[in-house]
Length: 200
Image 1 (spheres, rainbow, N blue to C red):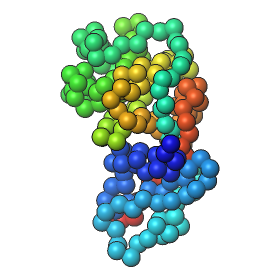
Image 2 (cartoon, one colour):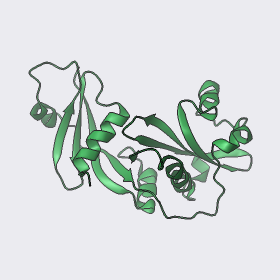
Image 3 (cartoon, rainbow, N blue to C red):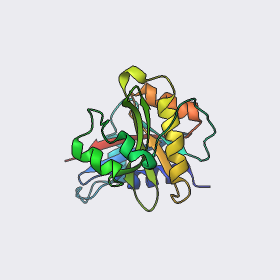
Image 4 (cartoon, rainbow, N blue to C red):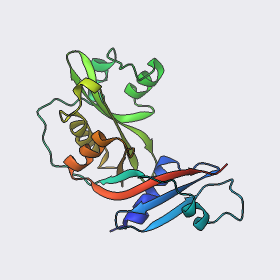
């Protein structure tokens, strides 16, 4: 079994961080802290320097999705087989081009969605995917939060990806308690926290 530190390093790779000119500081759930240095840094810059520059406050929490997730929700969850059903239901936080690409199996696919009253109210999609794994990206319309929709779409997303994707990750921001509650509700494995440290 991989350690939380190894998994946080792999998740950083999946997320494409650190970018040039930055570092990522990671702290595992058991308190081990390390840094991953991006390209383009001063040759004398070290991991110890990155650790000293870690911002205050909580880092962004990261979780491992370990299928199968056992949680049932009394809601219909749609996937790529229902693309035409949701094509005209684009939420305002997606551009027309992004929406078409998502539904056509391009960037962000695979995806799962919940539709209520003729509108898409929750989405779980794949903002990043590499040979090592995939990252879940979730969104729920403000008036529909707290009803289990994000958890339902995440469960369905994991079912789609699990057969051919070695690792599934779920991360969120430190101040997004709703998203953290989804992770807790699903029993996702906490890996630790990440801080991005811009250095240029």
